[in-house]
Length: 94
Figure 1 (cartoon, rainbow, N blue to C red):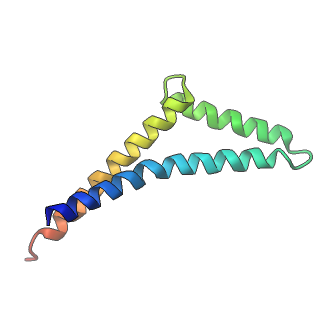
Figure 2: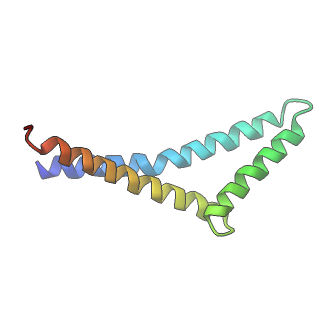
């Protein structure tokens, strides 16, 4: 049974790390695609600036480090939630 728990925690951790990376990537791609619409180039530039600034806040000035920090925190929280649900479901009902 412990192998199933370990597998569940690993899958949850990987999904928790990949989710914010994919989410931020999708946001950046959408903001860049808006730049191809005539008249919205400035909106695209401002959007990229805001996303990069948001990431720099979490990464102490480095946007890639900000993505890494957000991914690590998200993965940790996902594993903690999975651990809680596994422990809560293994307790006998009263």
